Length: 561
Image (cartoon, rainbow, N blue to C red; front, side, top):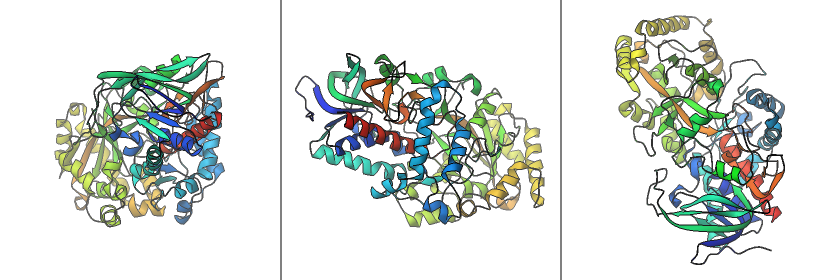
């Protein structure tokens, strides 16, 4: 029998399905439950301006296998090749990887099958040029994507969130769903070993803009009874203390300073609450942080950083000026690069490049940094991606960004680099030697420099040649100038571990048994199973993991009621 969501003056609610967290996974789960005829309540600790959560800010990259977009770009892909890449990247090697392995297989089937058609039915479209992220650079069985698989949502993150948000709002208008902003869960209620809902604090109303930090002033309390509860509260990237506490030794020492790629509300607060209700947390030491972070010149949340999505041409130097080893080139192996840089004893590194490279290869992650794609503006897209000059958002960072140095000569560039905080570690002669030596390798069609060879190989792919890679040239060629250096920081982003779940999204206890009434989805569940990505991710798999795990958990929770 379907419960009716309602409340009296005492802050008590009831529903069939309670969803904690209104990010993409939560919206999908709620929509699936409503579609199954269930009454749903969604709670979140933030004001309603944040509906859609972190996915709203995303680039909207989606991982598909053997898609029409790939085939049109001349890419040959298959489920077998994708599985080889996924498992070679994940490196599953623990007893706890039982369910993550199963989730990986299920997700690959989804990405190769109905995922694209399901999204197309909801009106989601895709940019025709497929991107090539996490290129690897190792052997066939090592980490990385063998082929381009990064499909950009037409409309970026907001375009991906829109149909699921609309479904929730339609259900709300019909009285089948209740949205409760500023409701912070502090406890999952348990009766006889089954989760029966949640209770917590009502926070003071807030008029903050999307993404801005909000107060935790308590003005009341609430309690919700539900036959099924879905935890979809996100990860830990906004909580630097928790990131450092869970930082694995294999990645070296945690940085003393980091930027945040997510708002402060991505705080991991539901992890201990879920564990207290019996849920097993696994793979907390697996995490995904970027090494191409730059300080946002116009920040929204605390320590707001933006990730550069670099093409393969920039010279990557550590804080001392030493060039990074093979295959740690821009866009090839995120966590391999992070581990290497943490061993240097410095929290930053550098890109050195030319104006020609920045114009062709620099894209900034995030919906707000890509107005052409986000606003579906074809004219702006053509001018910004194919026209002369850097895109508007990139130019704003060149003009105002604290981490950018633009100079005419190499000596002037090095002096500018050394003038930034931490720049005193830079060995000027080493920088000159690395840049000049790299440039000598450009004079022939053949080379021993692996990065140049990779660059030329990348340009064999039509998509890279069209919008992603600059024509190979000497960095010091005056015609390609001016010279640019970018100081790069570690940027927190995703949790790869979380609540262990079975293939129905049911949260599992210490002995592997399902906890009655409790489900998890999205980043809170390591995007499924407690760690579907293993140690590394193939990109385009984060919002896709929210879609898949939210759909699974929402359907299963509804079916169990």
